[in-house]
Image (cartoon, rainbow, N blue to C red; front, side, top):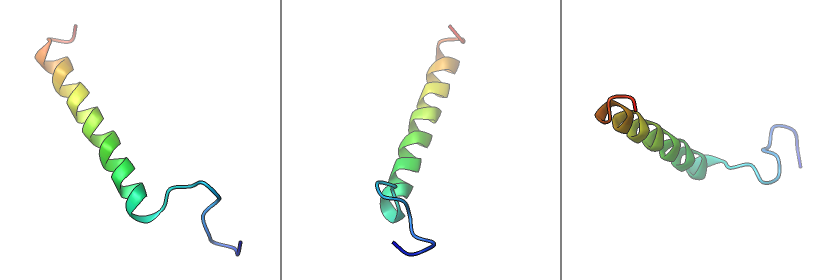
Length: 40
């Protein structure tokens, strides 16, 4: 590998964006459930 490339096994490009969106979706969903259940 040359300098500046991603390490083996690292997510890059579209896959990286998809994983970030998945994490954001889960976070928002859990915050909404926490709010809906009055923090229980």
